[in-house]
Amino acid sequence: MRVNLSDLAAKGATPRGFVLALALPLPQNDDTLSKRESADPAKPSRVEGMSADWLGAFAQGLGADILTYACPLLGGDTVMTPGPLMVSITAFGAVPTGRMVPRTGARPGDLLYVSGTIGDAALGLQVRLGKFAAPEVDHLLARYLRPQPRNALAPALLDCASGAMDVSDGLVGDLAKMLRVSGASAEVELSRVPLSSQTAALIAANPSALETALTGGDDYEILASVPPQHAETFEARACEAGVAVTRIGHVTRGDAAPQFRDGSGATIAFLRGSYSHF
Image (cartoon, rainbow, N blue to C red; front, side, top):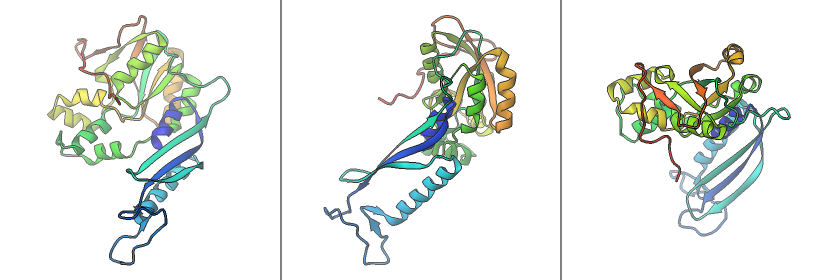
C-alpha cells in the first residue's frame, strides 16, 4: 500500500483509492475450499488456509493505512492458491489536468532535491540478513519494514518541480534513470546526501556500507528537479508540509552518467547503480 502511495506522491497525485488482489493458501492437509475452524482451542484457528489472527492483523493494518492516507479500498478479488500467500495492490490517484510531475522534466540548471534520509532501509535489510552489525538498529529496521510515503509533499511538487520520481531502487540508479529519460546529466555532492545518525554511524564503522546505502533501494523518498527560481518556495512548502528536503546537486547538460563527488571534488564510482529486480 505504502509503496504504491510513494509512486503517487512523486507524480504530485492525490490518492483516490486502491484495488486489492489477495490469494490465500489452501488449508493445510485439506484440498477443499471450505472455511474451517480448528476444534482444538489450543491450536490457532485457520480461515481458508491462513490463521485467523494473521488475517485479522492484516485487515487491521491495512485499515489503519486507509484512514491515515485517505485512500479507500475500491474492490479487487480474493482467491485461494495451492502456492504461497500473494498480496497485490494497485493504487489510483488524481492530478489537475496537464500538471502531473513527470520523470522526464529535469532540465540543465535545475536543482536536485531528495526528501527525508537515504540508505536507512537498504542498511536495515542488510542488518536483518546479518551482513552488517549496528549498535542501533530499530530505526533502520523500521525504515525497511514500514515505508513512509511522502504524500504530504505532493502539492509542493505540483507547484514547483519540473521532474520527480520516488527512490525505490537506489538513489544512484534512480537518478540515472530520471536523467536518461530527461536527456540530461547531473553533479551530486555526496556530502550533501542526507543520512540519519544511525546510517552515518554504520557507515563510519563499515565504509563499504556507503555504496549499499546509495544503491540498495527501498528508501521510498522523493527525488525532484526544481528550477532555481522555485527553489525557495519549494523548500518553504516542504517545511510547511513537515517533510525535510535537501539539495544534493544540480542538473547539467549532456547525456553522460551523473557524477558523484566527494568532499574533495573527486568523482566516486559505484559497482552498481541500483537494485535489479531481474
